[in-house]
Length: 397
Ligand SMILES: Nc1ncnc2c1ncn2[C@@H]1O[C@H](COP(=O)(O)OP(=O)(O)OP(=O)(O)O)[C@@H](O)[C@H]1O
Ligand SMILES: [Mg+2]
Image (tube, rainbow, N blue to C red):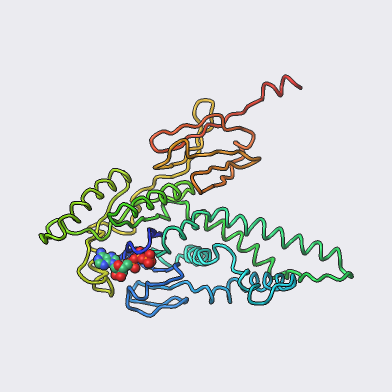
């Protein structure tokens, strides 16, 4: 199974390109799922087919769904939400606020990823295309390792400890509601699934992120930042779609300046994102809705390319040995050394770039070593680990 995740700034054409990709793949015979994880769903408008939180057949080989948080809360998150709500209410919060608080960070996206994991396990589709919310929000996808750790480690331990305390205090008055065995089982199950999702997302043979941009300065800048952060989190970006180009031959005088400007930005895009594969699509005279326009968009974007084939298998995160060092290599395009902060804790390495911070759990071989050097080489940050203080320790003993 392949997973394509489209992301980009608001309004650049993510939904249209995602729908066009799914339609094209389905017509090529791939069993395809088009899934929207944007709370402001618009896949249904784009395809002109009514959709819901349940899987709907659009045409042969093409299914679609718009993840519906209310439906998810009532089913997948029922135990978790119920418990948190009761807990909050026992602490004196009113019912509505408690229910609101029970919507945990990243739940929407996580629900979508649970579907993906399930499709993967059942080999239900050849391709899953995900249409996401604008970049800012989708960057949360990046923090998936941290979010999942929070659920699987912190929340689980917290609930388990409460159960222990509650058992110890049996007989005394305990106001706090007890977590049920069902809840514990749910959390355990979710933690295991999250680890599987993480493995799926960081395998470039399975998952590719595709960026959608317009040839405009602000859009390009935001996309550059997003690209850096995706790399930081170990996700492979394999291509870029430049949408809404004006055809060079449109001889209309009033577009002349616009075309000139776009040509300049196209150059910037090619230089900045090289060697990423760049695909293009042109501004259409009418709004892009309905199957016919999406077919046309798919033709423009992909030409002879098979949309499901990975365009790059470049791993943004690698660990290898070189001389006496163990090297952690992170692809960090558009980043200067001064923007990076590194901290080593007991078993992880914190890498901070701008507002984003990734906590990398280190392999056991690196736990007793310290980062002793860092350098940038060809857009990658190379951090050299070495055992330090060993001589001192042996002298001391
Ligand atoms: N190449 C194009 N030519 C003409 N109209 C386009 C083109 N690409 C997108 N549009 C139109 O622009 C609008 C925004 O497109 P779309 O919904 O695909 O963007 P989006 O990135 O998903 O937006 P959002 O961030 O709001 O989810 C839609 O009305 C769509 O029909
Ligand atoms: Mg959209």
